[in-house]
Picture 1: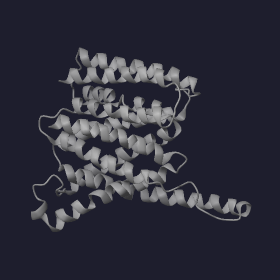
Picture 2: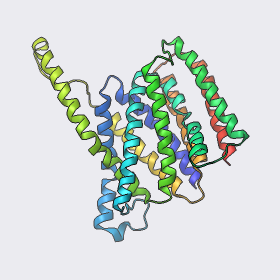
Picture 3: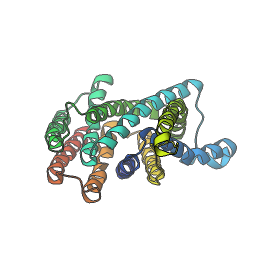
Length: 311
């Protein structure tokens, strides 16, 4: 059951990456990120209200939002900080990079989760897992050469460094999920970690909007109008939020099942990279698709090795 949930989560996560790229293209990253958090929270708000005011009706259902203690809320708040940092870095990276480069590189995250499990939880890596990690790392090196053809230097491009930082913080979040899903209510974590992101972003958005207004005021004498620029509403923001909520719901549910393995769930979930890659190839018409496709196969091979090594 948890394997089926993970596969479905992977496909939804791939769709989320596509809509994320559509939402941030030429748009304000911080505003898109803030609205994503708002939409995700609103998506689960009815379940939260029903769980509080109609507990008998919701009790026992998959959407029941349980109670958290004060200490547990602190743990969820910490997760919100980690996820928000990872999302911010990833949103900026995917805005500045071709999706056929960003998505496959992001798909190597399970390798870092595995290394983290090796360091933090004392798990031992077998031959399959070492092979998968080496293959994924090798593909990263070759991706840098493809990137150079498109004017992207992996050593000096700030968006590549943002993406790598997003992968590392995402790996930390994945390891933290393993700890939380066996101890806290699954739906309570999903609802509150998105809700806390709103509160964390309110002061950020306050200073951002203030800065944008100052820029608009300076441009007003030239343009004849004073407007808050940098953001354009797109329905892809709602769609990316819905796909993310559904993907996370299935992901958390899979991790909450007693016999599930994070070392298996994480690589399978990242195999959804095929969806954004195909979107970049056929709809966004990005370059060097054949070379990137071969390297993507290498990344997927590495993920497959991680999967077999964790069985």
